[in-house]
Amino acid sequence: MSGALTTPLATLIRPQWRPAALTTIRAIHTVIFASVGAAILLVVWDGLWQRPAPRTLAAGAVVLAKSAIFVSNNQVCPLTPLAEQLGATRGSVADIFLPDRFSRRIPVIGGSAMILGLALNARA
Image (cartoon, rainbow, N blue to C red; front, side, top):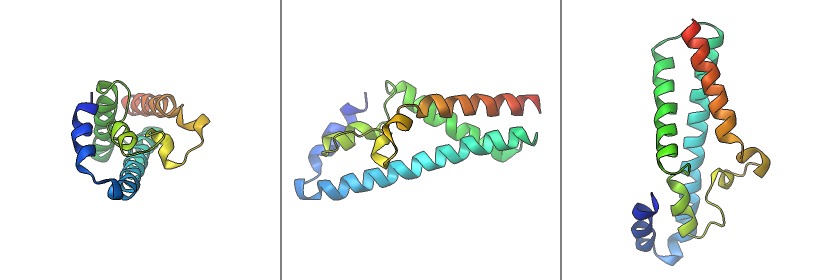
């Protein structure tokens, strides 16, 4: 789905700029990954301490929005096709240097933690 948007964008990037563009995409992907992970941890933390707050709602909304984007894009991050079109062998979350064994399980681990956090907050 996102390939229709990223293909024209990738063609605009000159070949000599592609390594720098790919590094930038990896950096952006790392920041997004860390932000969503931190938001999940915040939801779980507030649920464990039974202190839901406006920040919990904001963090949950960020995670749910990212999840909706991921699921609506055929369970592929929208940056993946762009990274691959710019020369990455794999544009997945593995491009932020996580072990393959771990990176393949991120949706399950993150989803499970988020469900736990939502349940704990609902109980509080």
